[in-house]
Structures are given as C-alpha cells and as structure tokens.
Length: 167
Image (cartoon, rainbow, N blue to C red; front, side):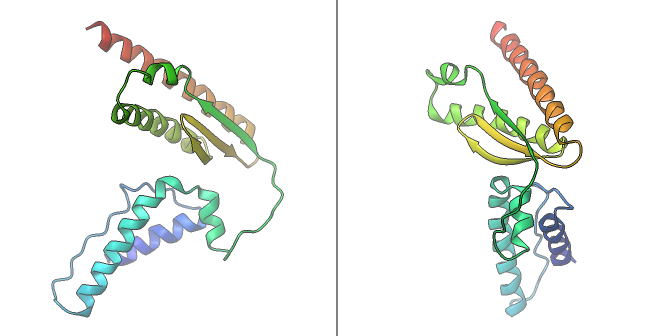
C-alpha cells in the first residue's frame, strides 16, 4: 500500500497534476521480514529520501520534461516574475552565516508558496532573488497576484519583526 501511494504521488508530480512538498512524500517501512523484501523496502526508503531532498530544487516544468526522455525545445509564451528582497544585504551584514541562511530560507519559502498558489513555477533561486514564470491564459494576472501577495506578505513580516524588536 505504501509503495503504491509513493508511486501515485510521484507519477502525479511528473505528470504535473500533483504538487507535493518534501513533507508530504514520506515512506513508511512496514515490512517485518528479514529477507530480500526487507532489503527492497530499505532501498525504496533510500530513494524516497533522495527524492525528498531534491524536490525543493526542481521546477514542475523540469519534472514534466523528465517523462519525455530528454530536453525538448518548444516555443512558449510566458510571464516572468523576478523578486528580490529589498535591503537584504544590509540586513545581513552583521549576522552570522547560519542566521542569514535561516532568514533567507524563511523568506524564500514564503515567496515560493505564494508563487505556487498562484499557478507559477520557480525557475531558479539566486541569492535572495527568485525567478519564476507563469503560463496559461491567465499568466499575467497570476503573476501580478503573486507579486502583490508577496509584497503584502513582506510588509507584514517587516511589521512583525519591528514589533519584536520594540519588545
């Protein structure tokens, strides 16, 4: 049952029908024997662990191409969204690297969630920048919605941070 669940999730992800995060892709090893089946179950768990680690760094469009056996050149009309965290360098100048990475991951995760919720796809992360794209008939509207929600979220995060500093 668990192998089927993992297989279905991965098939849906590759087809572009299912968006999953690494937290939703969890394999439970229920095999009690100590034979080849147990060894196979362990290998499946290892593969799922690797896939969980890769998921945050692979775009949906890349996964869709994986099923086709190789890169294909196609012409598409897309809308791109570039985000950059204003003042991030100045904010982090006096911080230790672990704190910078923690803050960066926090903000990029929030931005990524908003982009995905608005039918976008992440192309790449470059420092505190995200390059995302949108396709389909409402690509421009979806990109604008994502941009406005990211802006509102960043302002809310700033207000929350300032309130904590005052205390």
